[in-house]
Image (cartoon, rainbow, N blue to C red; front, side):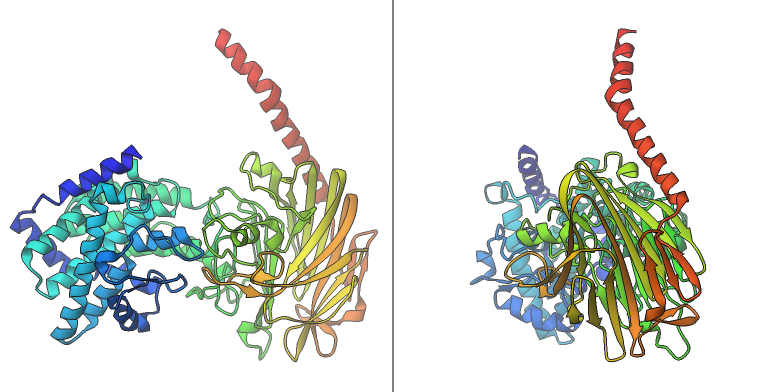
Length: 633
């Protein structure tokens, strides 16, 4: 708390420093040549076409901070309560409020106006709003204890809003003294961003900070700021991606955001003649984009994973490649080829997930999968809702909200300790006729869950094996997209309607008890999905249960046409000609034999258990002994 208070006092004192005319004029000229929201704008939080509409509402006292969050009404900007935390996402509201998103909207409306009268109207409102915030932020008795004023994400975003504000002031010929005051505030933000004690070195918030500092470094001509920001960004890039060029933050939305930030910074540096710095950031960019393509479903939306909503992407999925395995990152993807005369949006898409190397934006989604086909997300990830503590957030981040296996209707905590032994894709065999990917989740106490995920074009087979030292109820979960209709449902088979041409047949080949849950958005739990921040939609969850010390599921999922045929690459097989031998764990699909279990996989799993035992023995016995011996010597 003392640190926060000192920061506020220092901020207040910076307002007394007036920059010299030459420095300020040089900065203003540079600013006029760059629209600050090239790298940041309100369009991420509000539709661009509604900028003027929302600006008018803000002018009347409705404080908008985000399209999906509630608004607050105030009698005048002098009466804004800057500690207000409304809506079901109070932390997000505070973050966007102190990023000054309402100010950003007013400035964009001002700059878009052609008539002087309109420009003056918006800039006067912007000045009053900014003055209200400035008084709050620079007065310790008012702002003490508010952690969002000087947060990494907040300061990074607010820097660009202040640049936009200064640009609007400059173009409306606001008094020079006032413009200099805003410039002093901006310089203080630069000093704050440069200070490593304020820096977040291990996730996207640090990248946001450096993006703002790069922009300020170029505009002010401060090479020390610029070089320091690029040095930190190079380290961030090494941390942000695995050796497979997969973004580590367990989220398709954040993978897109981080890629876009890096590419935007790189382009900005190149456009401003900083080619050597741009080159340092530009290595391997094509490989990072390849990962984004695999995250993109055929309908042009990112697959929901971790803290992700349903968002469109500019990255087209692979046109010819049909499969991709990222073993170190714990991901398998499949995208079917386009049949003759078929719209590419109807291709089949699958993702299987097991493994992580960072807990950032991580859900308990190991051994989960998604399935998309014929233009629809069939078995879906249920989203994230938001970041505030709530029963909805707790449910949606749990294993219960993913297409995976749970124990006794509980989730698990994604610990990083020994993660390469506890949660991993330990075996994969990619063949012409099918792909077999095997993963393990050992994060449930005393329980080991193994899943074989077998992809054979429009056929998918899942073999789950669970072992424990106690008796439990094991549940296999399938979360349906909101538009998927259940035609019939029994313990042995569920028939789902995709459209008039295709259905999905989900078949259980071993005994299991089915429960069907229809969601209620008033109650967190099975049968709800979140596609956007603060938004919930009812859907349906299928839950198959079995009980015992050990458990097993063998499940087949088939995309079936109206003639009861299933596509297997260049062939169409009659559903009746697809059989599963539960003893030999072999599928006979026409003339093709598909294995659900391999000796190679069993050997790898045995080695994994041995490796884990060795690690635990070393940590419990050898390491303390060696440390004790080292102290004596």
